[in-house]
Image 1 (tube, rainbow, N blue to C red):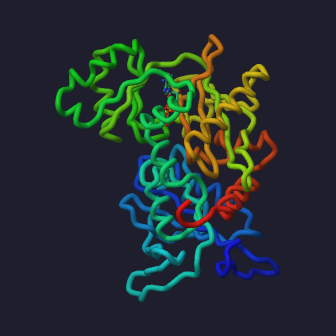
Image 2 (image 1 turned 180 degrees about the vertical axis):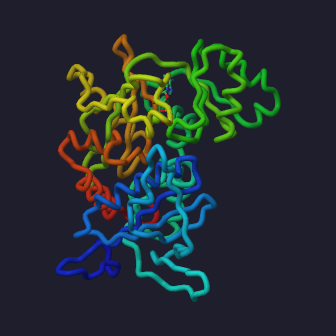
Image 3 (image 1 turned 30 degrees about the horizontal axis):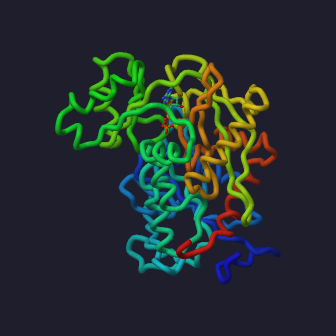
Length: 376
Ligand SMILES: Nc1ncnc2c1ncn2[C@@H]1O[C@H](COP(=O)(O)OP(=O)(O)O)[C@@H](O)[C@H]1O
Ligand SMILES: [Mg+2]
């Protein structure tokens, strides 16, 4: 534990954890809903919680310690709103609080930041850079792993170099698209049909389209470009969607892999899209442990740890696979801040492995406390 940032509370010493959520990304609402669950479940006997919401313009705000307005339901898309701004002070682990019309107040140091942010400006290394500059420990991967694993193109480059199996793809950069659309789309035909068109750096399936025919390709690329000017087009992979949770090892221990889970989209959706992920729980079946031959589940776990290490991840990650009918495993992606509501896959696979939601949050905070500060 760190030195002077603990506070005495009752008969114990509490660690002060800033739970940071919301953010300038299309996954703002999802992040709020995760925060709702974490505020409810975090061990209050061990942790003092500072809920910090980032609004859609990027302002950091101290918000109420109340899960209710943050829940995501079919009728409520939660959003961070507030008046009390907070700023992290470089090099001091201190937060400055500014209430309108009041002089700034210094809030005692933060021991650990728990970033519950998905997508750009949260899961992509930018927030991690700010926290490094502030000398603050945080949960999850560092700057480089967060940035590279956010980019579905760079991610594949790293995995290929590590000998991990990835599917065929083509990349369309912003400049290529603006220069000559036909030429930019040319490499896509070699992938066969259908293809999946995706923003390179997004998540929660936003901006992703399954395209069956060349005539639909341009519109799908434009739709992806609304989220990221860099677009990746992937050959469709047949097979089951298999996921594995990985937690960093304590000290110099190897990473730990969870039981293996499976996602099945059972109706109304052509793939695991945004609605299926967050709003239509009845259309998706998560199962864990997945019904797989034991040697396949073991292979998923071994390869997931290999992917975690190849990516240089820290803390946690969820590694997503396609299990093809022929028996081949193909790596779809790593998420450095996976969906983290109690019903999300990552907490579910750890629950099946003996770690419940509250214990999982505690484990992540303790791993962050082991983290060295400064250049590593
Ligand atoms: N190459 C592919 N072949 C088959 N299905 C895919 C492919 N890529 C994505 N999908 C489907 O789309 C979903 C979302 O894609 P994914 O790359 O995981 O994006 P996100 O980062 O938004 O989760 C996957 O869970 C899967 O259902
Ligand atoms: Mg995914």
